[in-house]
Image (cartoon, rainbow, N blue to C red; front, side, top):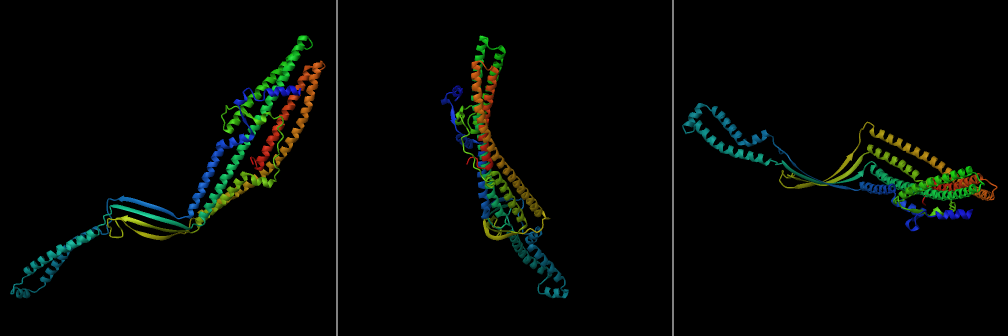
Length: 502
């Protein structure tokens, strides 16, 4: 019987395709391809690079920053240092002065007594003559003074309708209330958070690959089992048909065996379909075309339980390895630093400034039409005085978020502790079930051997043989399931311990 089953299994070792057309894959090669081609893992790596660049960006906040400004502006009016009335007064300075002198001279001459004018007239001096000479004198003086006044107005002309300006500024933070230090710590934590997220994705990718790999192995073994069972019932069907022809078996027995043949064929069809779909999933996880013909190394192994168990780590060590807990700790630390950033809003901020400014027109030399500038150095101090408690409320809210993150981490620790203990129990239970199925296999094979021998001797009916075959099939199937359970329980334990892939 065993030789017959081994021969049947060997026919299906590599499927219908030639070996040269199939790709042979081991669990390690599947893992390597999955880690290389997994899109989510690639995204996590990019996020890790983003976090590293953000950390470098945060470091620059300690250093002085230099900025350059430049601009041009045209205005419809120029800047005027004199009002229109002042310009009018200066332009008519001589006229106003001569008018005043003439008026004052006329007033003086009107107050001179007539006797004086008679005396002056005897020597040729008359009011008209004096007025004429005075008008001639003040006329020339008025023109000169008007020119001087207009020159003053022209000197105050700024010509600022076309203005050019530029500046180079240097700013060096001195004290920002601890905000820069907190932001740099947040950047460091963010980089660590991205690394832990990448590790979590890596372990999840390996976990999915292991699940898909052993699912394919399980279905392949069940395919060989289903084919072997089909061969058994077909052989029994042929024997029964011969017995019917010889008149030592009834047609009813033949129909019963034929039904078993149909059931075996349907079971084989379902297993074949499941195997194809499982291999398609494995190819997708490995980054291979889903039509790729693959053969797994463990498909042809007789026993799958000959592997090392996962290391029995202490729960605390397992908690230290889990990337999920590390991420939650990162979130707690981020929340604390966010609180420090908010607290900085109530503290003074000091910065040094310096630079060089240029302008055209030159503001430092009478609006001269040429570029010129000035150096400057200063200290900028910002002191919050009153904000209606805005910062205090934000700090309280941030502390509440920190408390929530810490509680979530504590809850996760409890769940992971339970998961590790459950996984340890499942590994032990899977191994016990495997030992039980091995014992059942020996009994089922002996039962099938005696039933087959009794049927050949004519002392056992075909129904008893079919029952023995069904029991053998069930025992073999349970053994395959138990072997796969051992594998998967070990994978689950490693994942729970945070050492999957190590």
